[in-house]
Length: 393
Image 1 (cartoon, helix red, strand yellow):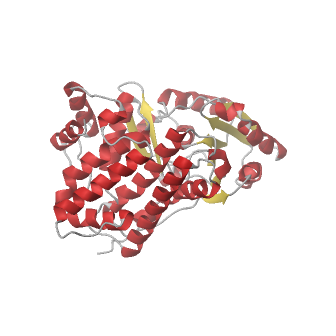
Image 2 (tube, rainbow, N blue to C red):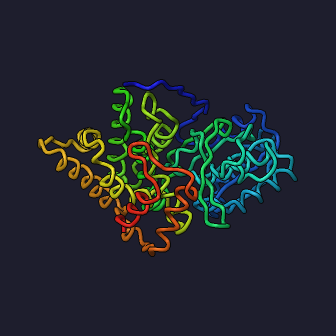
């Protein structure tokens, strides 16, 4: 049965070649006067992209300060540094130049600046943000979908805790999406991004009640990204493939592929990966690829039909009449695809080997120290989570 839903996606997307040159006009449109230009690696600076953004801001009479140095799995210490800089500079708008980590860091800075106090409060569930300093983004990596989502995920160094906060207040005012900016990405980062995009829709697909229209949109998006990833593996300069992946990043995580579905998705794999990312600092997309096949085998018995539908829609699976065999074929097809694009399908291939003690710690943290279960497709408690980590080795 189709579930009731509210679909809210207020972000303006400006898509295409050289769209970056509109950043000043867009920021001014949303009332920006003093801007924080937030970015990650030195590449954004060396490539001239930051200078290009700042030139456009200056042309509109907008002042700015810079803060670089955001790393994958963005750190709370950098966020606190950003809040202090914003207060000192009377910042009223944030421009995130980068991918999901930069955007998530910007959202956390925006929460801290607009609400005061410790921004970690919003990620550990102590407080709910009531506002966020406005954010616009110049997207350079197609992956996280944070440019159109209500979510952000950050890491607290003390305890290696990686936690998320979902709130409409942090939705970006605009997202500039120029596929040309992704051309220089290393192959591994491109494929991590494609995996992350697909997982955002796969998390939403594995439910027990859904809307046919949403299923068809979800499977179409998944096929598009799968095909584009294989093209980019061999032809990384293919503009159309990069364009499809970039917009899929936004559509996969702005709520569209969850409309009418039960519980808006499962999300167990993301929760499992968050702990891996917090402890081992692995690339998010690769971590998701490493955990999904084990999760899938662990939970598939509770709804084999959904896995078969997934296999039919994504890989053209032909039913054999043996549901168990068809489910295994589907999961194996996913593993084969991951290997085709250089992604891991287990923790060993990811390059980590958690000890029994570390697995116990991962499972304990994943349950928020015994305060929750994860997943809705199959509810997973401490022992189930622990078993999945063990089987994924």
